Image (cartoon, rainbow, N blue to C red; front, side):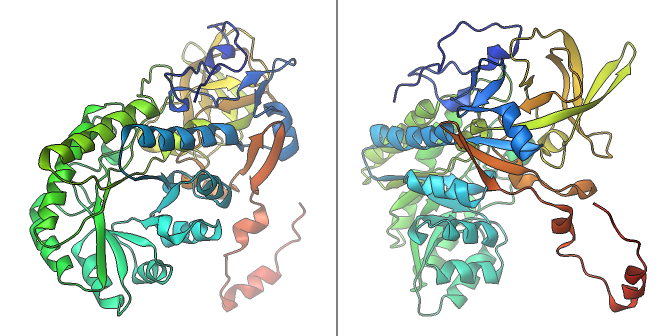
Length: 474
């Protein structure tokens, strides 16, 4: 697949045009800050998917998640085609839907031939409602409830078993029905990423430790209602290094060989995901093709060296599929100047629609969508509207002169933004639109104040207080 810059222009590095995508056959969208369809129109406004971002804000309000369908589909195809090129056996790409689970995203992944990795009953239900075939749904999680397990069993999904309690529970509740399972193993491989998103090292809440495998293999081999399809490992998230996943392949193939000694015919290996994306211009992740080539080749070489037939190879990208496909648009409000210290620019969202800066100290880049050619002349800090001093989206960023009413866009917000959004300070969660070929379709409605009260209940003894409340005017 050949990817080229959509407008073919020389970019000015002192204005927002510097962020326009510079794709070529050797790169992929996870290495860009903006979706691949991003351009500057005649009004000097940012356009994504052929839609003027400022017009989208006028039509749908803000904050607003804007998801570019072409970027998401391109990422799906790059993963699928790279596996076909570098892995001679069968393969399957799974979308790690914890990054952003909703009907539209799952439906797009399904239409591109991807399966879905889910981590809760809610994500499982969403994938099923989006029409994803149960045989392409893999259910992860370190503390699945009995009800969640029963939902997965009833729909004949594959359950990625994480611990002894879970595997013993499955053996009990599956009855005469055969349940497909994979075993999650902690490989002891570390990568340089945030402490909270390193999941492959031994000190992790996820998976069986290597020294438990003999006992686990022995137990599973004696359960006629458990069909152990494969092994799974996931070593972390937002990874830029190539070596950790190349090290993972041989480790998993060794375990595959050990499983066969217990009579288990392992047919699938899931090497997880974790490929990083660009959040700032300093980030330098591998391309999708590079990541797949290294990870797949490591499995092939390990199988050949041990004389083992190639298993079906699965991977489960999330962030690298959808992170760079989305931006969040805000409306600028107040400004506070602290002389000789800092200028704060407030927007109409913040930590409730993007909790990653306050949670992970994550860094983002932003632009003013209605001033794409204006020179970056001011250093400002982008503050959210929440009653929290730490509600800072971006600290000390270069932007053009900003006034109230401008449209500020934070880039690369497709992963772990809507999915981690909250109603903190009783703010309704934003809307999301899917854009393609100049058309914008609402895929998530903006919550209303009524939605905020939908689950609220008043005890009978407080009804008198409620009946005395004054009329609320909207």
